[in-house]
Length: 118
Image (cartoon, rainbow, N blue to C red; front, side, top):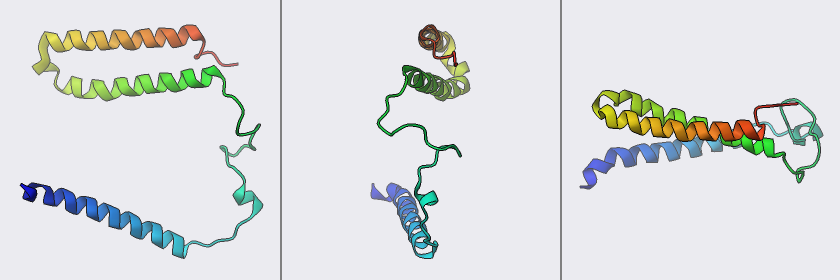
């Protein structure tokens, strides 16, 4: 029984050892010249605006929710499309219900104004 898992365990062991060696080498070989510019937070080349405890707009969370919804849609549609012929009418109805739920989420986000930016 354990013989089937030996290749998987070897792969996991290799990955862990490789990650540890790479982190160790980067720690040992990297130059360490700390400056105030390097220690400052980096936000896409822009100076940071406001403090770290400021509240985010609801639109930020709506955009994040929209990203998750459509990311999940893509993840579920690829295997469905590859097995579409075997699923038949049941698979088509099931994907239709799934797409309806996603469309309701899109309409909700749209009505809340997450797609409008000032």
